[in-house]
Amino acid sequence: MNDPATTPGHSAHQKIDTSVPHSARIWNYWLGGKDNYPVDEEAGDAYTAVFPGIVTIARSSRAFLRRNITHLVAEAGIRQFLDIGTGLPTADNTHEVAQRLAPEARIVYVDNDPMVLAHARALLYSTPEGATAYIDADVLDPDTVLAAAAKTLDLDRPVALILSNILGHVADYDRARSIATDLMDTLPSGSYLSVNDGSRGTDPEFERAQDAYNDSGAAPYILRTVDQITAYFDGLELVEPGVVPVTLWRPEAGGPAPEPIGEHGGLARKP
Image 1 (cartoon, helix red, strand yellow):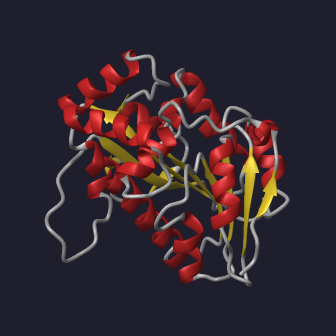
Image 2 (cartoon, one colour; image 1 turned 135 degrees about the vertical axis):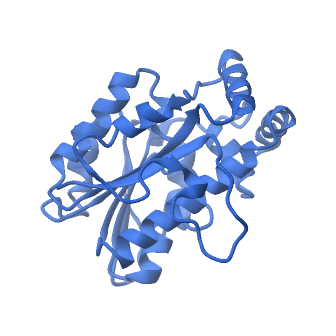
């Protein structure tokens, strides 16, 4: 297995504070991961006490991403992935899903959190045929992200851009849209955009719980309407069934009938 390449940035030198809850560690806790601290479990349990369905949302988001990547590799022939805001490594990371199907796949992960960087260095190993790299950069700086990604990916060939539960952290909606647009504008024809984020209009209990969380002084995560999420794909060709609750995006056969949840996503191709 190949060691992941790491491009350090400013956050690599920041101290990891384990005394306050952290959104990536809380999400990891809801996913069933172990890379968290008691303060994160307390915050996660406090949220689930108000809205137990957040665990379903977290795990359905991960399952949606797995199905997206499977489609991209097996049906669309994609072999390059740029995963921005990857969060803590857990089960079915992008490179694991992609390289199981295509060992030669190349994956670049992007985050700007020192704790995620430390875990990425330890856990994100590639197949010998492919490559993984970690970029310490901010989604708010697309030019830096793309310049660093070009050291591992061939940006003249199609790339799948993954923005999973990251644009909700960008408070200004127009800025969030411009990030997705600017990144896709740089990628060649045949590239894909995968987006999923918490949504409004499906689950009022989730909306109340998230609004209360945002009002608590924690780093906010903004729920957006389905129309707003759909607009991230403007100018692209949506893959069926379009932008839908993530549980309804090409669900696996043989399981129970999926229920809509307050997390919408889609996948689209750049013509």
